[in-house]
Figure (tube, rainbow, N blue to C red):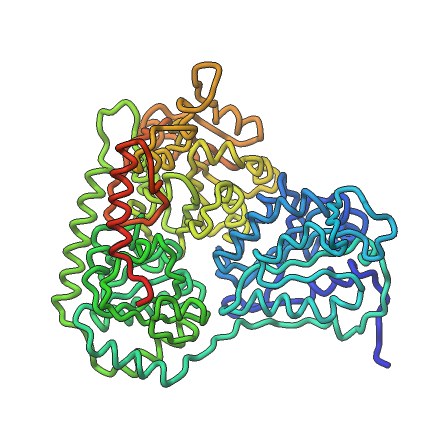
Amino acid sequence: MGRTVRLTMAQALVRWLCAQETEIDGQRVPLFAGVFGIFGHGNVTCLSEALEGVQDRLPTWRGQNEQSMALAAVGFAKARLRRQIMVATSSIGPGATNMLTAAAAAHTNRLPVLLLSGDTFANRAPDPVMQQVEHFGNPSITVNDAFRPVTRYWDRISLPEQIIGSLPQAVATMLDPADCGPAFLGLCQDTQEKAYDYPIAFFEPRVWEIPRPRPDRRAVARAVEVLRGAKAPLLISGGGVRYAGASEAVAEFARKRGIPVVETIAGKGTLTHDHPVHAGPLGIVGSTSANALAAEADVILAVGTRLMDFTTGSWTAFSPDARIIGINAARWDALKHSTLPVVGDALETMQELDAALGDWSAEPSHIERAQGLFADWNALVDRHQAPTNAERPTYAQVVASVNRWAAPRDTVVTAAGGLPGELMKGWKVKDPGTFDLEFGYSTMGYEIAAGWGHAMAKQGDGTPIVMIGDGTYMMMNSDIYSTVLSGHKLVIIVCDNGGYAVINRLQNAKGIPGFNNLIQDCRITRDPFPVDFAAHSRAMGAESRHCDSLADLEAALDWARGTDRTTVLSIATDAFAWVPGDADWDVGVPEVSERPAVQEARKAQELIREKQRVGV
């Protein structure tokens, strides 16, 4: 018999987490950088006991809401390019279900987070316990089963020895570029307390490497054949380019081959704004330059993107005759819409594709046209961002002021409302990898929490700049307090436009009068009044100022650079002025309605659907 050590399951789990390592820039670092935890019924008596004893190696940070602390773990994983992971732990009931939204955000965005929730008793002797939701037809189901559709790996630990096989599988899943996403373990309360003789070898340090699967040579050859025949090629750079460390390879490939590069929402920041092959963001919140190039393209290299509707204009952005080459580590993403799939790591694939292409390049006039279109787009954005004498500044003007002030290594973070569109269109990236827009799941509440995760990951390499609307601030703001306590500074810009203004814009555009989105259109018993965001955030320990104008904002930003803690700046903004876009979006519009405006919107929607590239 080999050597063993007797530990509770919770103690063994934590000791194993501490033994896992990875390499970042040639240095060995802990794979698990820390834990976000709120302790309660189901994790306070056993898991907290184990974590308390290793806080010098695996620090535990207390969040204010289980959803936001798990979102902080998502932001950390994104900032670390999926190479390092945070853990989030909760109690068995509402604490667990609070993390479902964060799990879905991580799953949608292909980001690794380890979620550990307490669970009911494996032996069922004290059932029903507090916070247990009983399923009459299946007593083995708990609320933790709700994590199955929003995680890549799911397990319930009902015997202490089960972690020996489950934990390595969870990590392998989280680090697999083809299957990356959150992992969930439900930890039965009585199992956490049980002691077991674990093999010493289970706790030996292990260095994990992220695999780089090479593409099939035949697939590369087919892609080369298609690309060689292209007259107007286009390269779409997605988030997978960044995670594969392929940004420089993509930029050099495109420069050498004369192919313009457009970016998805997750891919924005692959290139700096002024890179000679950069032609702007693509899709519904994209640029006229990228959308024009997409419509004209005969061959499209879609690299590291899952081709969501905001990128494809609900599949109206491309010619039906265009050939799409899908380069992706995930077969699911590489195969979408009858693309020519090249399944493999983005860096390995781009290097092999480059080598196989020989001296081929597109006609110089093609990249010259892209540069001209992008110059026209930049001029349009500049006009919309220029200050005016209007009573309230627009989002575009606020974005421009913050963008000018931001240092190259500052990372801007946003997720929902009107700011995603304005930042995609108007934020000029100064340094690669400094733009985080979570729009795969469009998670309201992501921003401040993710900013906390970015601040942990950046470790002084620039400051996270969180840009949010008033609606998002009202939904999830409590971890401002956490950032002050923990010493992780954010600069938060709150644009107050009186409610959910961008969804009101969509509602109005489809023929529906303003209803329940702007505060003024809600069922209320008194006149609308502005929230004092500066006073509210100051009550949580932040520095803050309210700004009455763009000039005030710019002065406050300079002041915020020198503060020693999270700083919140609020400014009232226009609810109806936006930088225009020209891509289509397929959304549901009533097929029948008595409203003439809705009837017209329905006709326009049917025209959009006629343009969709479906089943090609």
